[in-house]
Image 1 (cartoon, rainbow, N blue to C red):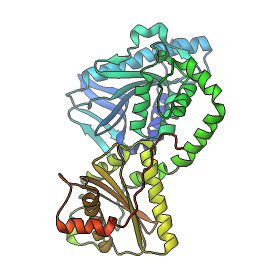
Image 2: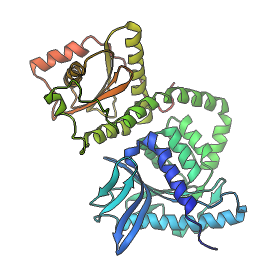
Image 3: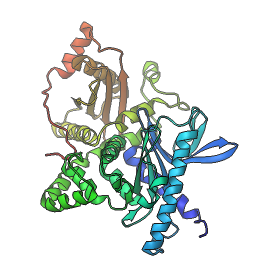
Image 4: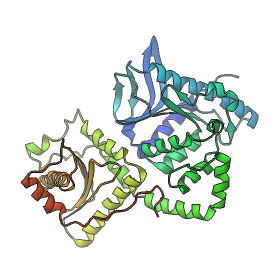
Length: 412
C-alpha cells in the first residue's frame, strides 16, 4: 500500500497542538521536535513539558479516516501503531544528551540542549473512530520502554480526555490509573468512553474495575448518577478557564506596563528580550490539578464580583491546598489604583501571605480594572518571620475567615 500523504498529517498535528494549547498552556506544548543524527530528523510529534511534568506522544493520522472498510482500518491501525511505538521508543532511547529543538508559535525556536527531559509517560495516538484491537501486534507494541510507561489511545479519545481533565497532572493520573487494566485492554483503542466515565464516577479512580467491559456494565447501571456527576463537573470546570486565561495572557506584556512604575519596580520585570519569569508563573498554573485550578478560579471570580458589588477599590483572599503544602495562592481585584501603588500592594500581599500561612512559595493574581492581570511570584527559602513581616501578615490576612473543603474530581 502506498505511503500516506503527509499534508493532512501535518494539519492534524497543528490542530492537536492548538487544541491542547489552552488547557495545557501553549508555552509547554511542543510539536515536531527535531534533532541531528547524521541528518536532521524528527524525534517525536508532541512533547508537553514543564518542570516536573513531561508527556511524549507519537501520532498517526489517515488521509481520509472514513474511506477504509473496518478490516482495512484494522490493518492500517496495526501497522501505524507499530510505527508510532517504534518512533516513541527510538526517541526515549536516543534523544537524551543530544540537542533537541522545535519551532514554537509563541516562543520561537525552543532548544533543549540536553535532549528530552525524563518522560513521565509516552502515548501512541492512532486516528480511528471505532474500537480497534491491536493485540495481534502485541510483540511490537510495548507497554513500557525502560522506565517509561506507554499508553495506546485513539486520537479522538485522547483529545476528549484532555478536554475533560484539562491539566497535564490530571491526564497523567488517569493514564497511570489505566495501567491496572488487563494487558489485552491496554492494546485496544477507540472505546475509552465507558472507562473514563467509570473513572469519573469513582472520583478519579479505577479501583475495582476488572476491565473495559466491566466498566461499561457498571456505568450503564449508574446512568442517572453519571448525568448528575457530569453536570456538577461541567459547572465547576468553567472556573478553570479563568486561570487558563491568566496563563494565556501572561505570554504577552501590556505595551504600557512601565507607565507609572519606579525604577525599583521595573527592575523586578524581565527584560523585554529575555522573558523567563512568566514561564515560571505559567508553570505554577499548569501544575495545578483540575479541581485545584477550578477552585482557585472560583475564588478569583468571587473576589472580583464581591469587590464590584461593594464598590471598594481592592479586595483579596488566599487559598492553599494539601497537595502542595509549600504554596499559598492569593487572588485580588482592583479598580482605579495607580500602577505604583498596585505594585506595592502586590509585594506586600505576597510577603504577608508567606508569613501568615507559614509558606515558602506564593503565586498572586490581581484583576486590574477588568482590563488585565497583575501576576506575581515570590519564593523564599524559609517562611518570613520578622516582627514587621508578622504584622504585615496579620494586617492582610488576620481578619479573613478560613474554610476547609474537599477537592474532588467530581464536586459534591
